[in-house]
Length: 466
Image: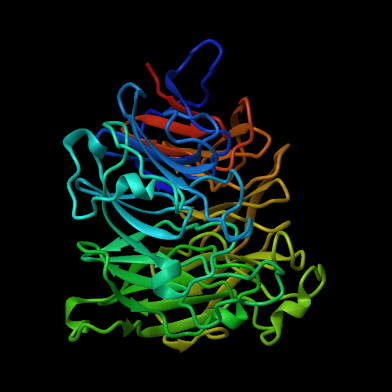
């Protein structure tokens, strides 16, 4: 959540068009963050504002727009899972964020599928080897649709529910980490409809796929499942520690795991291999570890989980852990971990811990010796990255689900009340601007090529200086 972009606006005004490059209509709920690559803008939403009448009803949707004009180019429309609403929450859409490399898009659909898409959609034909897009776009038992130029082209697909035995909860929510030939994917494994047991305790929380074929090649061997208090929310990140590349993963059990990044040499046979754990750090060591679901709805005592990504910076990992926004204790903290250690570093690896006001859904932004993080208690925090000392806080008018973005000497924060707050980056609090948009914001601000992108539930705004 740090960008090197320059010349970004402090504010823009949709009614007058001031500093507004273009606006695009989305669905009626948007929880995904926009990704900009190779002249395209990709964002997950729902089908509340259908772009194509043949895709009817509640769907998870990935929309693709032209970066220069905001023109709609194509979309992926995915039917909902029908097991129960707790598998694929109504109208939540596609919550996962796309990952782009070259002409390929890697993403996780609302149905728990890891998909590889052609960046150009069907405009250049159906590339294959996957050729069943028309059947993929409808529920089982419904005749396949005829695909057109405004539909997505799926190159390959892997169903995590079928192939890995995953029981996703609420939705699939993963930003895929791509490193060399491998995709690291959070499986979204979680509780069942009762919220009091894990339906798939042996299912992996983190899996690795071959980016060329979608073949499952590795998974964690930590057996995190029985300790997942609610769901597996966090996505993996990566960093180089001394001479080793590590993958950092926040488990649904409130533990940060560091795994050795996979190499082709690790795949000496066709079977799925286990990821090699380098260290583990329990963010809440005094919390319950056994029979964790008996603490359901206990706001004083419960296990913890992790929602935002662990952020690696200069041999340290910064991560937010918490009880649980919906079912657990009212407690959250930002923790700094020494990433150079080995083994169980729960006590030896803790550098500092900073208490937050309430649960936090966000990924920290680390920049120029400061950490910026938001919480659901409507508070924005600026913390010294070296010591964990608080520098300043600011109380917004609305709850905050999105992560902060640091870019162009500014800190951008969006709220569920539709506010966009802009601060000067630094140790002294200085509010530069405050804008009220037309609806709630779950999506994090993003910047690319001199343009600031803000997505509300129903619209995507591209703002730029003249």
